[in-house]
Image (cartoon, rainbow, N blue to C red; front, side, top):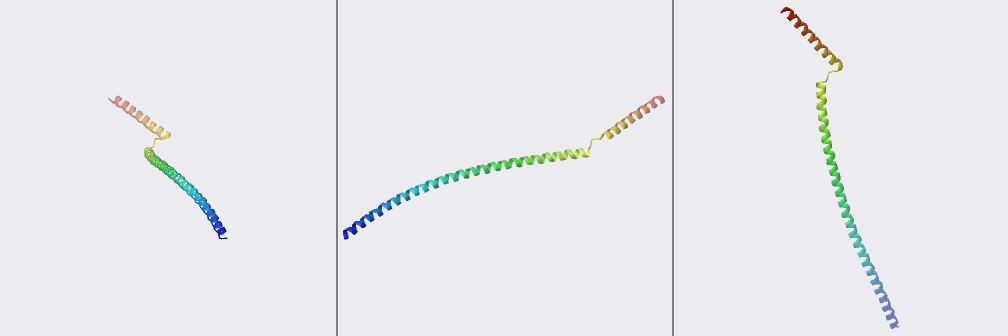
Length: 123
């Protein structure tokens, strides 16, 4: 009987060894897959970080361009204000004002003509 127990014990120990070896191989494969997954994730995270940095730089450049354009628009508006102020200060005469000024000029010419005619008669 003792031999039977020893044989069963040996068989059980052999099976236990085989199961242990199978578990170790499976754990080794799982560890290798986990390492590959980690490396893959690290590469993807690096690529994502680089993409975010590029997008951030593009956004910064776009904002700088917008700022430059806003400064130019503000300068143009300031120039327009100056021109508008000059126009209001030295406004062009309306049609009625031009007609009135023309009539004054005509009246002055007529007065000068009459005055010169009178001086010629008196001379």
